[in-house]
Amino acid sequence: MSRRQFQLFHLFHLSRLLLLACCLSAAFSTAASALELTVDRVAGADGGKVYRIASSGTVAAAPAAVWRILTDYNRMAEYVPDLKSARVVARNGDKVIIEQHGAARLLFFSRDIHLVVQVHEQAPNKIDVSLIEGDMKVYQCSWELMPVAETGGTRVLYNATIEPKFYVPGVVGAGLVRKDIAKMMAAVLQRLDQDE
Image (cartoon, helix red, strand yellow):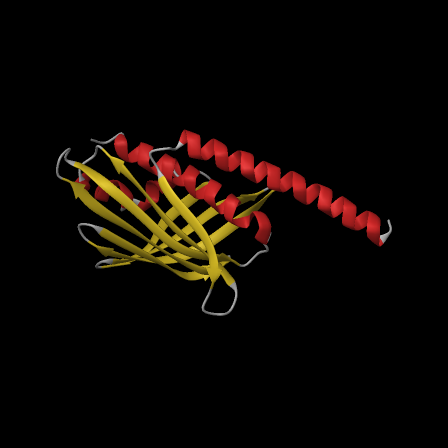
């Protein structure tokens, strides 16, 4: 294959991937209209690119019920998409070490992900998660719970900064991350709403 043929082949497949990402993004903005979500690709501390994620949604469950579900780490794989297993390795007061096995689905392939994270619980309304080791260069996230006085429900905020160790195409990466986070948040919010 000549260089020109290779470039045309690459351009053709890239345009198909962009179309797929746009269709998926439109589908998720329609299906998850109650879910607020932004994903930005920005410069990280090491000069690489990281994904900065901000997401939120409101559930009918009270903050205490939401806290109980979110801190039941051994059962996370029951409702978080693409998470195969999660188990508490150690606990010391408000600090918890968790090992997670999951999958990252990028376009037409899937990659196994292994993470060991430290969770810092700040009861009753904040959970901070930071990477100890695993298949990410950067992985920091937090869950924050805000009572909704009018309904007795809970506003759930999820913020994260992530950078995978593996290659994610820059052109479509933010769309793929957005799709995965939208799927994860929708599943978490649905699970939280089952326990009012």
